[in-house]
Image (cartoon, rainbow, N blue to C red; front, side, top):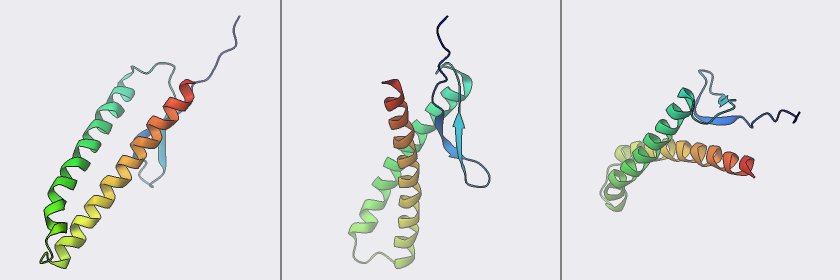
Length: 98
């Protein structure tokens, strides 16, 4: 009998209510929560691209009001945080596949 290998936990693209990372441990990648996480990752990355497209003209305009620049900066920081979490999760899954 072969030893049971526990899969590496998957970092999910959302946090707990207290801001801690959430992980999923499963023996298959096709479950409901895995698909939900995949779908949310896709949405987060698409949202980041959209926010970047909307922020570029504002950032390029020297006459942009500071409050709008601050707002855009906060949204861009949120999107970067999401994209880094997705990248970390995918990187962990790639290294776990080796």
